[in-house]
Length: 291
Ligand SMILES: Nc1ncnc2c1ncn2[C@@H]1O[C@H](COP(=O)(O)OP(=O)(O)OP(=O)(O)O)[C@@H](O)[C@H]1O
Ligand SMILES: O=C(O)C1=C[C@@H](O)[C@@H](O)[C@H](O)C1
Image (cartoon, rainbow, N blue to C red; front, side, top):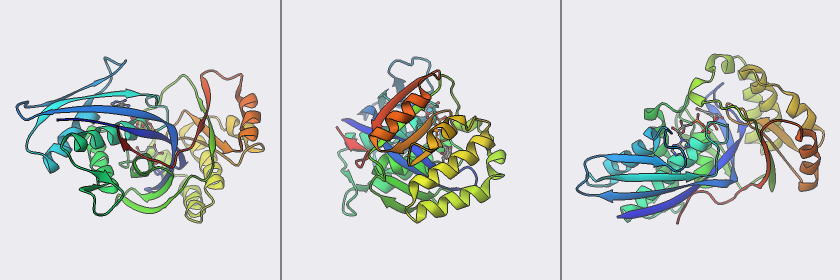
């Protein structure tokens, strides 16, 4: 009983830490999970390729929750390999959870699809991963915004207090420029009460996103949450005149700009002297998939 699946990382349109409502969009780099289930194994054990000391609680919980709900008490192993940097604001936890859940469902022989007649809908599979993320303690709100963008692709707006999908659209930009500084910021350590202080700006950004004005929502979000979480707004200020939208992603430290490819080349020059890595990626319409 083996299943393999991949799910993309994502960038932030609106951070949900202020109000519980958030928005994110899928980016074309992904995490792959392989799950082997064994009816005779008593536990699930995980490994992260290239990170022998990485915390495997999340992916183990994901497989356990799938087995609890859809299986017959199997144990087994789960392994991830990832192009999404961990704790960089690019939704590594959502990509890992979605890949692990879809791979486990595939190992059980279940079809996961957007189709309401599928054995398991993608939205339901996504909620299983979000519950596992809450149990593993890697999230503040459950991050259904990030998880749904990764699972469904395109851009989503959600209410994370109810794990409810408020909107889903195809990508609002073709390309994104992603700057990832060397430091890491775990979501679970973020200052949620500082974020709550910028709730009026988060509400404004959410209204813009629900009107389909995702790029401007990102920019409003980025200024508010950079200030609340103590990140410099200077990269966003340097980029703003040259792109459609730019924001601190997640709880940082990455900054993501969207716009035409030629505009993003100008932003890349503005960001060139910074520590860390800058990469130009495509946004992604397709979400998680069985391999
Ligand atoms: N490839 C992976 N395999 C297994 N678990 C992973 C993997 N990547 C991330 N995780 C889990 O997610 C945790 C990091 O979650 P965190 O929310 O802090 O990062 P993020 O999702 O990249 O950030 P953000 O929510 O700001 O985008 C790790 O400690 C680990 O438990
Ligand atoms: O842990 C969380 O609940 C979240 C973390 C960040 O990615 C945010 O961008 C997201 O909206 C919610």
